[in-house]
Length: 77
Image (cartoon, rainbow, N blue to C red):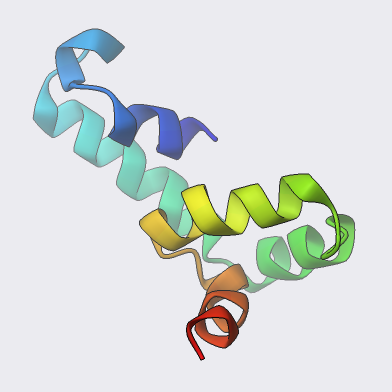
């Protein structure tokens, strides 16, 4: 959600420069791409919940979160 918020707003609205924002987002995305996080998030979110559907469609797809890549791909078919 932090990376989503930061990328959805202009950098000055987040209180930082574009370079600072990009660096922060990249650090967050690196953590979110770790296998342990991927496994934890997939185990913790029910794939039938409305939050899961919203998150996959609006956050995970835009940020290209690997934990949800198979869900996004199956939706495209």
